Image 1 (tube, rainbow, N blue to C red):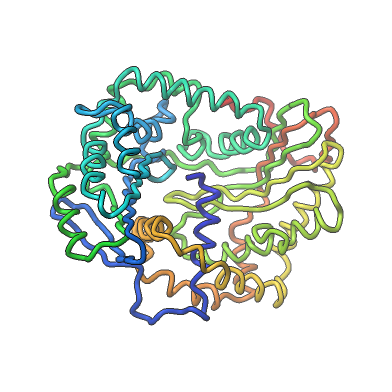
Image 2: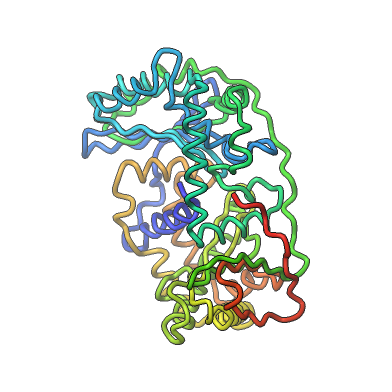
Length: 458
């Protein structure tokens, strides 16, 4: 799942459990179990519909990719459905259709995911397929070539999307050789170098029960769920999982700007820096700070100033993307080439303002109200609940996390929001501007260093 969408969903889902719908203190999302082979599995009984959803998180994301193999984690996950020792890709697709199931797999920055949703009456048959895909992928050369060409084509077509170009250049320039600097899908340079042996080894090393979390949600009694999990995952062999030593995320020593010339009428701007990890205890203060600055849509300061009051931008927002490692914090703007400099100046002012001035009582109250109390329906499906179960387990938040969340937000003060802004919104920033450069006047201070050579196009 796209990481920006992921963090938005996190915010939304956790906002569902406001004071008005607060559950008893002992309430949890589900029950936690562990098989002898190390597989942690979580279960939530939801008998309203005759459906079962399973989401398997495998700690085999971009962070585990070796240098020069960007895209390996995503390709491994995607090719699980590309054939096994007993089923071709076509047969797998036909069985999924016959069962009326939804089965998918994909990579991510911190983990890969294999998802299944099926009618209860077809669950056993679907789990046989799920097990075969997970345990016995063949990574056939023809399927590898087909998938690599597809991803390369996607990368090439995305070069026509200025927002994507700006975002990827921003991450490449900000993170250097750290895996967060590369797209989950991989790069045009690295994808063709990924071999069948790479995929087999990656799967052998990381696709282990002691490196995975399984969330099960749906119309099952606990004893039924336990019998199924033991039957289909109890024989999954555990093994030592290698720990990759990650490169240090470089720190910006001064403001930097990267200009990418593109013959378009609107400039696409990304401004930001490295943010925080998900387990950082300042996550909640950062969440509220970001909402007030630019994450709150039409309620945010950036939107109010730059779009509503000045009419400078078609869109403007801030976001952050915390993971196992510190993800990026960024302000994104889309504006006319001619107004890029003015819009940028206002964005910098707003960023400085939230560092130097306390937010108002009204701003803080509205942010808390939204983050805690909105959109309770976002937790109303098995798929969302399965995702949330896996997420809280992966990041060690605890199964009672949604019911503790309101207090984590409500206790924040105006001063704490300013402290977080001062602590993490460093004056040293990276700016990427994609647009027709001859028409863009940024008027940046002299201490901004221009990066002459942009990162290689992905």
